[in-house]
Length: 324
Image (cartoon, rainbow, N blue to C red; front, side, top):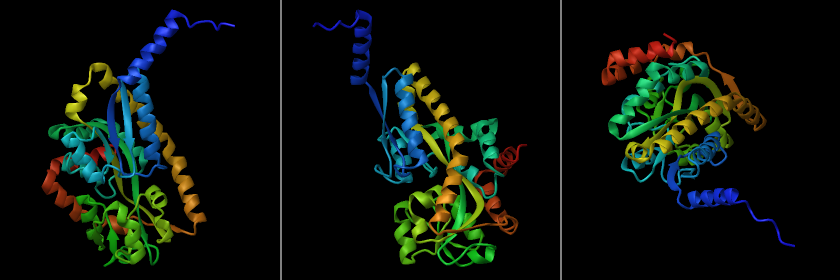
């Protein structure tokens, strides 16, 4: 028996979709987080939404786990155009002033972070990337960072004195750890586990999802929740690549980034609750740190970067971060 043929309209629609898929323009997106991370899930959602909103004209190809280099290399690659879109916390290649959001104890909680990012001063801060060939899509939370030592919990600044702590290559984080009395060690992300295991460093100051995803808890059994710094996963695209897309393509990327950011923020609370539960089940001892004595030690950090970036700039960010 002969099957009914597709209607001419449906056939034309199918052919159009097939042609769009075949001719889709590919955008390469790179990040250093694990394939099971919330960042990877966000990247996958973003890719799906870009494809849908562009009618198949744009395809986002994702490279997780540092496949195209560490965060610094990813930022450099986006600036040079060898990578189209990047996610990461290393901002010097984009604009060192972006690091202002990582000043210690700047934000009270995630609600304050998101209000700042969505407000006028936050938008002004992230617009600085345009000066060096980057178009900023926004920021996904890398989250608040904690203290995690191999030999015991952190309860007072004295517990950090003279301790070798791995810190990302962010100048503010390095300065902050040194101000707190630790010996900051800038070690590549992929080498942290073995560095902890071998005693090259005595601890880390991790965002707790990385602490779990990278299995650092296997060699570091103490997590001290301090929320001493909030860090972003900056989200950026090569400006020339972005400007070279047609209006519909740019609109698809902007809308996909905005919707993905909203979804991602909504997942954070449940994700952190599960991480803490899983870490406790894995034998990690968790304590909450009194921030006050640590806050009292970071004034020099604000002075250092106020001189570097401008005291008025830093003061404006501090006021906006506090809801002013």
